[in-house]
Image 1 (cartoon, helix red, strand yellow):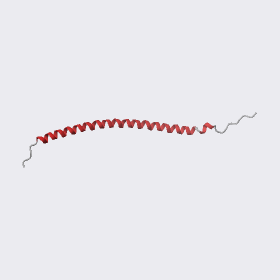
Image 2: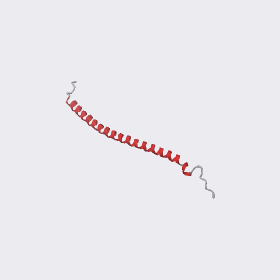
Image 3: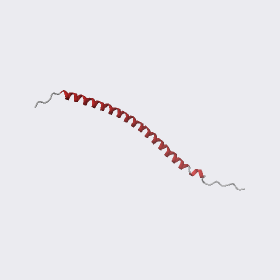
Image 4: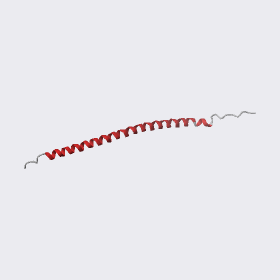
Length: 80
């Protein structure tokens, strides 16, 4: 009886480098996704803080306008 000969390379071995490359690409994609999520969260917080600050500044401008209008109303009429 003769012993069966093994092929020089098993069929699964050819796919190993491709799987390793794919695994590396997925790892990079996951890292980028995490970084983008963190950046997005930071941007959301910054936007909320900016909106709050904008609202505060808008209220201050309205109050200043009201006070200026009141001061202008108290000015005497110019003599002609």
